Image (cartoon, rainbow, N blue to C red):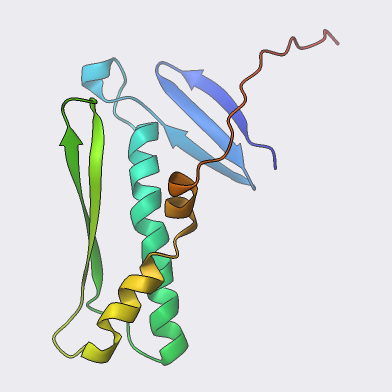
Length: 134
C-alpha cells in the first residue's frame, strides 16, 4: 500500500491515499495557517472515529439505532514524558439504550484497528531515496 506525501506550500503537508487527498496544516502559533488539522490531530481523530465505526457496526448488526450515541475522547498529558499518557473514550448512550449491551459496546469499540496498532506497533523503516532524472 503506497501513500504519497506532497508539500503544497507553507506548512501544509498532504497525503494522497486510495483516491483521497488528506490535507494537513500547522496551527498559526506553529507558523501554519490553521487551514486543516495538524497530523497529530488526525492521529487522535483516527482513534475516536475508529472506535466509533465499531460502535456503529455493533448497533447496525443488532438493529439498534445509533441516534443519540456519541463518543467523547479525552487525553491526559504525561508531563514527565512530554506525551499523552492516557486516552479515555466514553461511549455516551441515550437512556433507552439497552443496558445489557453496555459492556459489549465497550468490547466492540476496543476492537479498533488503530488502537490495536498502537498496542502492538509495527516496525518503522524510513529511507532516503534519490529520484532519478527523467
